[in-house]
Image (tube, rainbow, N blue to C red; front, side, top):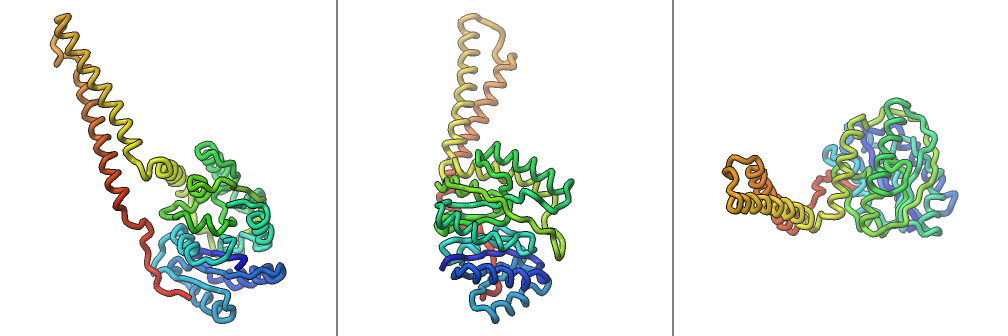
Length: 311
């Protein structure tokens, strides 16, 4: 199969049929074999009923429905697991991502050899104050921290080599940083394509300003987990050892100073309490690293969700 189109959604009943028909027109025009995978993230409107009708009329439509709302990352993760295409395209269900971009995104993976291609909504049709300006600041910080030079890391319109999405895990709110996860998994050929951004036709945005608060924390989590997730002792153990050793040397110096130069009592000197504190903190960090090693070897699956129906 050439292409799997993965579409996570939440309360998008009005746009689904139009989006499906648009995708099918583009794929048929270019002669691609395909599947469309809808992941209903616990919608409380008639989205699932619409998807069932699309499945009945088009055998290339597959879907899964969550029992409740788990978030976009869980939806993408399930969609990735279900996909069978050589190239996987992800897009939002609100008609703001144009299916006309699919052929070029496919070619960049299939012919130009990219592992991942992220869309860049260079010209946006969003509210400038609440989305446009914060998004530019947000992406600038992301580029500085991650080293990946993408202008719009959180764009829902992306294409992936199948091997990439089968070897990464997306959980929590980490869908914003799939390029970072891919990079740290060894997929370094990451490209970018300017894509059309459509004005929202139906419904309202499901994302608020909270993503700009939690986003940088999620990025730091990914950076930490990428480097030390399987070896926490390398982080906590090293820092703990340095702090403990420094505190111990401080206490040794105070003892030698007292014995050789008969200075005032050790307990009356602030450096004594600083040394003790450093030893205690260092030992605690070392123990944290040791416990982290135990946990990392016995950690359960991060993605825990229940699918109520599947097509």
